[in-house]
Image (cartoon, rainbow, N blue to C red; front, top):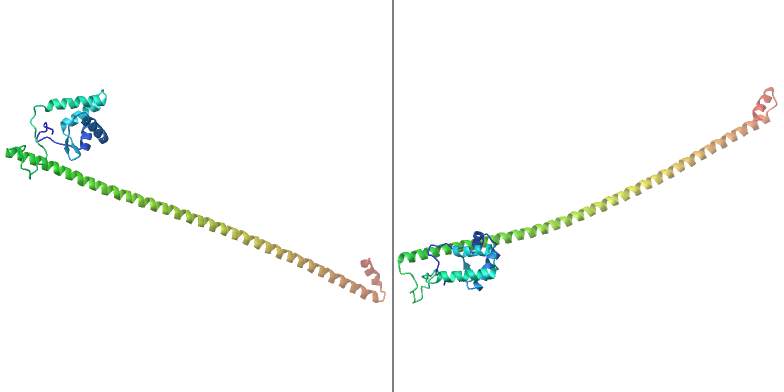
Amino acid sequence: MRSDIQPYELSFSSKEAAEKAGIATPTVRKYAQILEKNGYEFLKEGDRRIFVQSDIDVLVSLRDTDMPLEDAAKECATQQKERLIGSTEIEVAVPDTYSNNNSNLPQDPNQLKEMFSFLANELAATREINVQLTNDMAHLKTTVSRLQQDHHDLGAHIRNSAQKTQLKIEKLAEQERTHYETMLEEEKQKNENLQKEIQALREEQSQVWRSQSEFNRRIEATVDKQPKAPWGKFLSIFRK
């Protein structure tokens, strides 16, 4: 058990230690594992490491060292062991109130009060972190759900727009085809009507010519039946 922890000393989570040391949270975990492998001790609450200022100083030294990490971690572990020799062990864990062996508890009421105050603050901070993490997870789930819904809506909108556009194109093509066929039929009808009019004019002209020829023949026949008159010679000039 760590015996260099002071009653009033602040403790930090891995994320807070990373911020203070100026490194990433995964790097904190990596350094801590190397330190523990070489004999360094961290204060723990279950499986969770609790960092104090001396631990953060060690993390900074590993961050800035030019030595291999293993050698630097071994040196930090040795220095910690030397620092802990002769120190008075102070229990910074929730005591078992149902245990009959309370010889490790401070006997001074003020020290007990300070210890419980420290633990209460730590517990409150832990609860606050848990609440924040719960809220962050809920917010993240809501955001992911909203993004998924937006993606679904966007995909549906694109598909609907594509279908509408395709229908419009097909409708316009059909209208153009119908319009072209209508114009073609109208032109064909106009051409047929024009041919009929031309044929009618030709027949009418032929009829006029035939009537005129028949009229001329009747005149000539009538004139031929009449006695010769002086003016008959005059008319004969037009018949030549």
